Length: 304
Image (cartoon, rainbow, N blue to C red; front, side, top):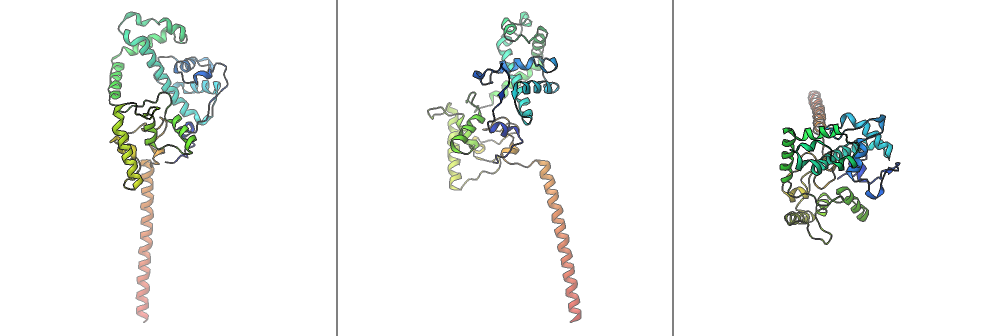
């Protein structure tokens, strides 16, 4: 795996560059990870006096507003913009989920659900009554119910979910690098997230995968197994191929093309075309050389 991805957000977060605050509102005790606190600040942004509603479902028109709030509150390089906005989108989704679970889910059919609960009014004053009604209205639609049920079914299929809590892959990988001087292999990161402090596995269903990892690791050491692209130890141990999207055993911003050094299909097609042109050129030169050689041979034979 190549670690030189300076232009990509995965590596920018990978190297652990801190975000330093310029704002007295920042609370160092929560390490900036409490989504409710962060999203309250996003809802009431200072840029041009605009405000983002909790009911919004598309961050695209509001990207510049959110980015202005971030750079006003934190010292953050422009190259982080894409990663920060993706994180904000995830935080917004999580914040809405928390609101729904805490105040709406068990009362979705009650008429008083349309009124903001006292805790919402007190803790999130930026959420207006109009915002709240839009928030409830969408969550009563068949579309929301369909997506919610679809998400639940997908979640049920996750047999080996991460149990590492807030210390995600990036932090653990960084700690591994500081300790050993190298980044952990993907199977090491995956397993580390599922091991207790005493060395035991957090769930019994992790045991077969841990045994498979140990077996393939031994085979690789002995030379009878070699990791090739996505067909590495973790893929073999889990028994199914990598799917598009997030890579197992890595933080959410890491792409397959980065980790596995994969060639993009369009680039691969261009490289194949270039190779065909080069082969055609070499073939032409060889044909010309053969023709010249044959001509010289005929001339020499005639002169003899």
